[in-house]
Image (cartoon, rainbow, N blue to C red; front, top):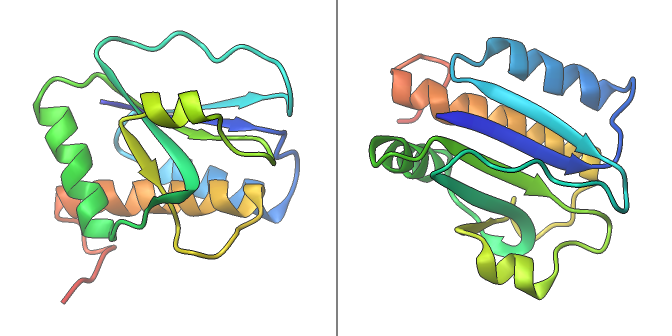
Length: 140
C-alpha cells in the first residue's frame, strides 16, 4: 500500500526537511511526498481504492500500535493508497473533515506544520516497523 503524504507549504532546506528525508529513506513501504502551495494547487487524483487521513487538531490521538493496526487492516482489505493530508494554517473545511476516513491528531497541542510533517513521517516509519516486527519500536 502506498503511503502518500500531501502537505501545504514548502519545507525547503530545514532541520524538519532533514528529518522527513531520513524517515522517507528508511521506509520499506512505498511512500510519496506531495507539496502544494499554501493556497490553490490541485491534490493529485488518488489510486482506487484509497483512504484519506486528515491531520486535524480535533482528530483522534492514536497510539503508534493503533496506527499500525489501522494501516494493516486497510492494507489487508485492499486499500491501495492511504493519503495523509496536512492542511494550510486554517486547517481543513467541514466538507473535507466529513469525507475523511480518519481525523488524526498528535495530541491536544498545536504543532508547527513543518514539525507535524516530520512527526507524521516518524509515526509512519514506526507503524510500518511495528508491522514488520523491527526492533525500532520497543513497546513493552
